[in-house]
Length: 254
Image 1 (tube, rainbow, N blue to C red):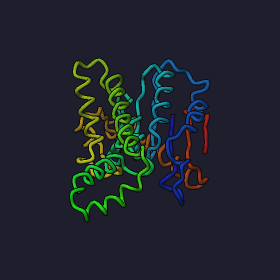
Image 2 (image 1 turned 90 degrees about the vertical axis):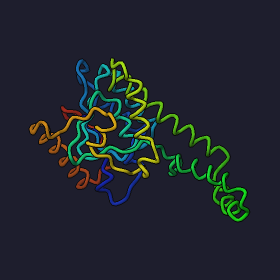
Image 3 (image 1 turned 135 degrees about the vertical axis):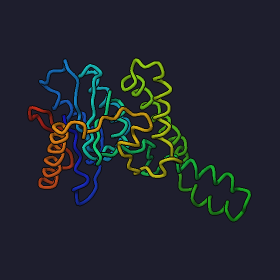
Image 4 (image 1 turned 30 degrees about the horizontal axis):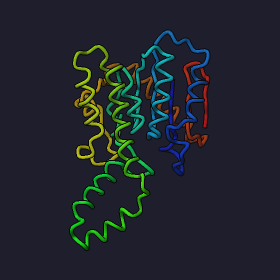
């Protein structure tokens, strides 16, 4: 199955490019009349999107395909796309492929940075000049915004921790410790600095994710990149925002 966003070739980014609840209909269509006895290979190309939508999609796919998911990243699967990848038993990546940090965004702002700035404002509150500056900045936040940031961080870490333990590291005696390490590496603002940080296959392998190189099998690599280029060409020519399609041609286009 292919889940492919056209954000890289679009003249303007739109909400239709990201992972959202509308995608469930596409996955339902792509999964209809498809045998579910085996596992699922999911070719994933996305800038990310809604954490709760990603959680719902993964839950649906794993139920259908017996908890057996392999994610193939031909180029980019960022943010919530990285989270989906962490529900796989393994991730196929090439030299050109990237995952990204899983630190959440709330109302378009990085949750970790919001909390960090608030802590800094508290520390600087004894300086009247600094306090006035921070009052202007912090005063723009609505009353529940800080709590929303805290909950978003906790939720993204909790989801990925659970998926890694149950699927990628299933049955391993140190599954919890491995999952915790991966989650901390993917969510750490100090290490990654930017939400858009591109993590190459080697780095993903270093932090403990189970990465298989596309270059190990030339046939698989050629097939994956052919799919990738065909999807990218279609997105650009047809001005599609998103394509979800299975191996027998059932497709959903946004």
